[in-house]
Amino acid sequence: MPGYEFFGEEERKQVNDVLETGILMRYGFDGPRKGIWKAKELEQAVCETFGCSHAQLVSSGTAALTAALTVLAVGYGDEVIIPAFTFVASFEAILSVGAIPVLVDVDDTLTLSPQAVRNAITKKTKCIMPVHMCGSMADMDALVAICQENNLLLVEDACQSIGGTYKGKKLGTIGDAGTFSFDFVKTITCAEGGVVMTNDKSTYDGIDAYSDHGHDHKGADRGADLHPFIGYNFRISELHAAVGLAQIKKLDQFLAIQRKNHAALKSILSTIPEISFRRVPDEIGDSCTFLSWFLPTTAITKAVVAEMKEQGILAGSFYWFVNNWHYISKWAHLKNAITLNHLHPEIKEAVMQNANKDFSASDAIMGRCVSTSISLLWTPEQILAKGEQMATVIRKVLSEQSVAV
Ligand SMILES: *Cc1c(COP(=O)(O)O)cnc(C)c1O
Image (spheres, rainbow, N blue to C red):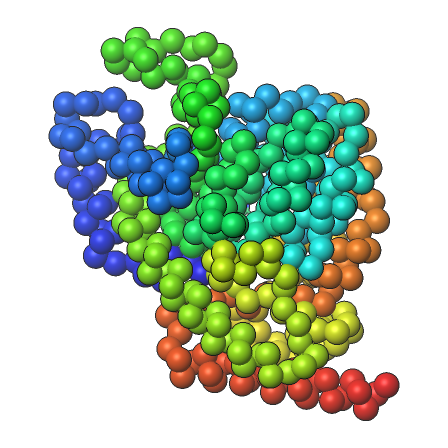
């Protein structure tokens, strides 16, 4: 999965270009920067690579989500539907614009269940935010249809699925806006960074200005910029963009390796009839950063995870069901709406209500799911050894469980 595994000469060269001029900022300083515009160049590369009309780099994936929601006018009291299996950034971004995160169940795609989304729509719903978790995608045809029928915005969080596609379109370019994270563990990295992609010029213009204090970027120099609205600072630096520029050129190579290693590991686990795999709405579009697999019951899965840990082979495999970062079951801070500043009491009440609903349908999925991250560095021998170690543990637990029954 992570681009940091392939950090090398190319990244150093790009960063050195910036260090040589000393212009570490992406805007202004036209003379001294001697034609070096890494952020602009990376935005251009994002548009070409992912087939979108506009791209605005920002300081993180969380900033990208926040800026996208802001510019699409999602604000006070609006409800935004997100999955119960995601990263905490989803609800952080929603809360930061004054809106209410409405968590709903995931299905065996590990992403939003379209039926659960339908059931959650109210008069206050403004936006649906699918999260393309672990390299693969949500059922976009179903979600696009729901948005059209109900006149809702669609913002894709594709932070974990850079390079994945759905029916020929790149993930993150299907909705009104889409985001990637380029943090250190993502498919391609800037160290820290993110991007908002859109095909709508006015959305782009809004994000371009909003992410730089509302400066309209139409002045002869920065001091001459006007502020048509109040903005914020979510700028990326030239140093970060430089790293990303080297990484984006390696994306095809990363994806090819991920897909090959994913297939090799999957074929080993497929020899166990009790194992099933995550449903992928468009198989060929899976970016294959993770192989996500299911066992028949939560009890068996817990036993397998415990045995993998015991044998020292759990590293790189994630049991999200008990994970602090990614699943509702461990988000006490959200369930209790614990913030350092004061939330409006009405919002606080709504946040708590939405986070304390019944998520048993998601529990039934996540309790049986393990995701194994796919390394770019594995040799065929290492995949074989890893797969067989995993298969041995799984077979052992399955046979003990069938004896116990
Ligand atoms: C990483 C991630 C983010 C946030 O990205 P940062 O760049 O770390 O702020 C948002 N959503 C998902 C699903 C992520 O995995």
